[in-house]
Amino acid sequence: MKQILILADGIVAKHFLHRISETFIRTNEYTVVALDRTILPKRLPSNIVTYQFDPTSYIKLSMLLKREYDDIFIIMKNRMDAEGAYQNIRRDRPFARVTFFNRWDIEFDDENLINVNANELLASRMYDFLPNVPVIAQNVGLGQGEIMEVLVPFGSAYVYRHIGTIEQNQWRIVALYRSNKLVLPKPSLMIKPNDLLLLVGKPSVLESVFKAIKQQLGQFPAPFGENLYLYLDMIKEKHDCIASCLEQVRYLHRRFKDRRLVIRVANPTDIELLEEIKNMERDSELVSCYIDYRGKEASELIAEDMQNHNVGLLICGRDLFMESEFREIFYSLRKPLLQISDYPMSSLEKVVVVLSEERSMEFISATVFDVASQLDLDIELLDYDPDGEFEKKSFILNHYENLSHIFSKNLEVRQEKKNPIRELAGERGYLQVLPFTRKILQSRLLSYFSADAEKLFFKLSHNPQLFVPVDIEQ
Image 1 (tube, rainbow, N blue to C red):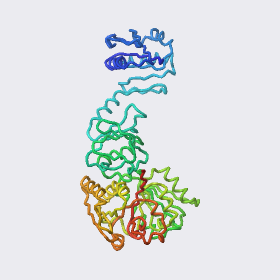
Image 2 (image 1 turned 180 degrees about the horizontal axis):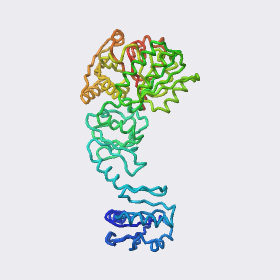
Image 3 (image 1 turned 30 degrees about the horizontal axis):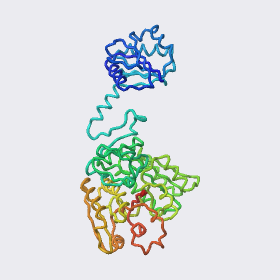
Image 4 (image 1 turned 60 degrees about the vertical axis):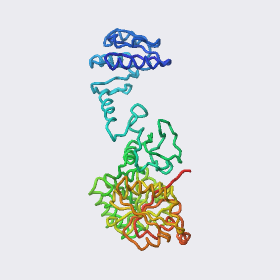
């Protein structure tokens, strides 16, 4: 049996004691000291013993403290009485666990005391009633926002998506409530309007997820991570390629607001470019530069940076991405990757997506619209079918059209019987978004005779390309 001592006075103590009496717990025994007996419940369960005296009297309280208690609660309406009772307890029980109801913002230096700040609790509870505010668990876990529930509105980017196609990095959908019933999530479960999602994860990540579910664009690279990461190798990349990367990443950094840009330089050999990078770091508090002078392996360097900087978007130049070694490294990280070409990002006109397998297209859809929004670009879908059976992709087309209405983005659908790669190869001024699958890792020789846009990515690499990781569970 757990022995609990409660020093009680005032309306809060009255409600607390009534709650205890209504929820009878056989494994707890309570000793209650009350200044005023009117705060006690009319019907006391057999596990509650009461005394009436002033707990600021050390002589009287010390008689009760001869008994061992597992927990002590101080809930009093007067500050001097509350502090006096606390000091009396600490005279005889310096290490006992005490829960103190604090209405006066008193500061304590006591590692064995649980300081329940009444003002913070009330303000937090009132805040929960504001519209468009996430509800977080106050009395479960750490109570810091790592457990959150979110109601999915009609028209959200998450509506009619399978849970298995939602990237859950540093957060998870652990439960779903539909029609007042609990549904345990499976990868194949589709989210519907008015579903209530229970999320668990890093508080800062959950804030971004909440905004994404509630139709707020501008969160990318969340939920993959927070910061932008540019990797440069001055031996493997030409001077002009690196210079172009630096110029274009400046533009991206301005568009993806409030994100930190981390620049990693391997094999530093170009003094002019190093000085330019250092100038970028000096000019902005949100730019950090790290130079490796020891010749570490690229995989080791990048893995360390992933752990240290909460990277959400990898960026590299075309020269580097064309090397199979680096494609393997980047693929293994399960992060979006932007391959920068010589075409300036600031001159782009649209985002282009070549439709392929439906589940992967559903997976990348939220990223497509978020990136298009932040870069202020239109969206074009290319639906390729040599037999003209375009109705096969009607579900994914409806999904993209639904998102275009939600986010007020222009969406154009082009349906072609001929391979769109040939058409796109002659065009400039677009950002291609495509799934980052193992197809990207195949050699060019094996891919030349394919009609798959992912296998033929290199034919369109004269424009920038964004590869979004796809890890669909069955």
